Length: 83
Image (cartoon, rainbow, N blue to C red; front, side, top):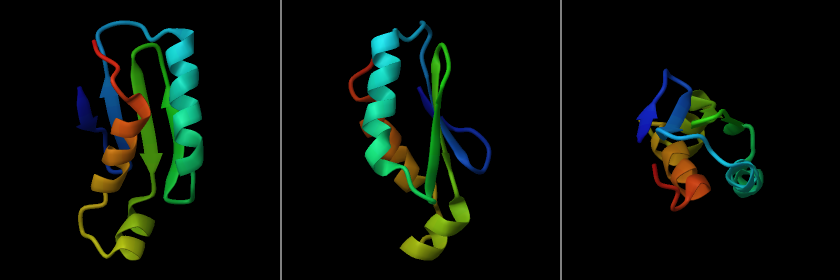
């Protein structure tokens, strides 16, 4: 399940525990996207949280809805992971 988690985070959550391999894959997939707009990826037992800077995204991409870009990146990062 994907959801906005406050003003500067997008979260993907499952009902199981991620494997170590999945965690590593998420971090590797995020690495090329890391920037001052998409600041970090935090992986817990069952969540993947993408922390982003909404102000920079709004200014640089001329949008009033900054969550769209990090949402698409997070979908790419988690890939075909299922619950």
